[in-house]
Amino acid sequence: MSMTERQACIAFNLTDKIGSATLARLETEFGSAAAAWENMPEEKRVSRSGRPIDVAEEEALAKRYGVRLLTPLDPEYPPLLAKCPSHPLCLYVKGSVAALSLPCVAMVGTRKATAYGADQAFLIAKGLAARGVAVVSGLALGIDAASHQGALAGEGVTIGVIGSALDRFYPEQNRPLARDIIKRGGAVVSQFPFGRECDTTTFPIRNQVVAGLSLGVVAVEAPVRSGTLLTCRDALDLGRSVMALPGRVDSRTSQGCLNLIADGARMIRNADDVCAELGIEAAPAETAAKPENAAPAFSLEESLIMRQVDLEGIAMDRLAALAHLDASKVASLCMALRLKGRLRFLPGNRVALPRPA
Image (cartoon, rainbow, N blue to C red):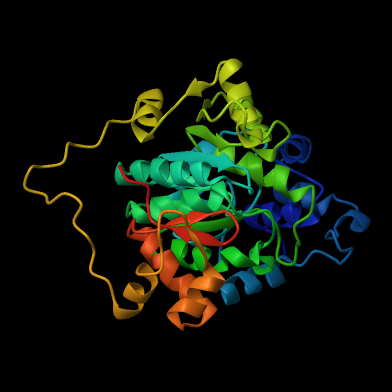
């Protein structure tokens, strides 16, 4: 049975050796992707693990997991990413495929975020989401997680691009966040075949997709040597806008962003600055009739949490003991309160009240 062009894209992606640029050359030589596959030596038609390529098996796994396989031949393949020279031959998408074609802004930064960095990432993402901009990030700890959470708080769409296969999700701590992203109209995406664990090579590849999906990249907080700066470099190579949030001059986690600004990146302070840089129309002004600072209603369990939290912060395990609640329940409640804007997350698995305006 002959292979279709679409199946050939999936097959070449499974080899983990041939990307879109190489496939374009093979198509020129053999006339089509399917013909190029048929002319591949048998010893090269193997997966990264050395097993023979089985497209039908990969498609069956995708169906089992509720995952869409998108190739550049599919009309739903994100158009901005398709224009990138090294676009993925296959995207594995859990959630809304349509989300990938929305106007997107990437937000990236260190996993070891400070309270300042996490707060600002949350607020900027929330503002972008409120303007109908999809927030793209890497679903890592730190700035990535705060950005996704902010977009959800803004009742918008966010897209997580991970550095592993969807069935080898990493980091495990953010799996509930991934589920929430999907449930609320966003998507979790990978270009890696099922079974691929993350390693030092997968994250730079992931970063290229983050940049490729986006109109621009916002670096929130990053040290000098950081994957964040690699993503910014990818964005520059694609002709995309690079923006950076300033931080303390004596903070290690701000040095990468300060260097970006010194090198010509647009300094931003909030979502309005990002929209101005990208030519995105600002959100309409709030109407006078809308009540200000309307406090959301708290459940009984949320009230148990809120009475123990102050501006200085408290560790979640201590919070669980004081509230007499299970630790996993406390984590879930804190996430819900974060999305309501009633808590902020601090490093060290701690939470605190929002800073006064």
